Image (cartoon, rainbow, N blue to C red; front, side, top):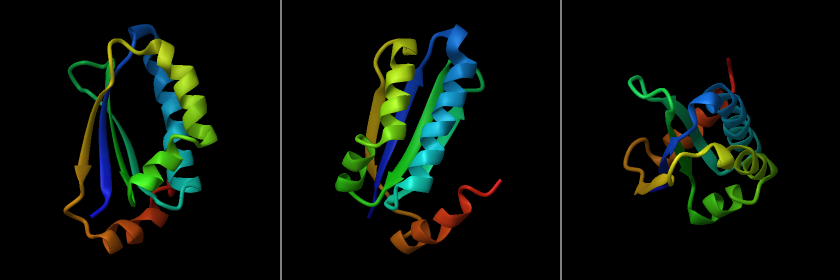
Length: 113
């Protein structure tokens, strides 16, 4: 089983558009540059447009810890942290489906637009 992280982020209303742009850079960098990052989704709440949900999947704890040291993550954190409203809510999970080979198989398609 892989490690999945579900993060709820609330941002200041005046920074919603900027948050989306900067977060896209982090998510693309994660799946493009981190061999053991298999998913990095950004979702916006339909009813509360200042609330975002990040869903990330890593091969293991070491891969997640590596993510926290990457240039794209550090740039994201430095830029968006002042825009946060309240604390991040972080839920850690073990993936059940897809299988490890399923996660690995779908990774190449994540950066195709």
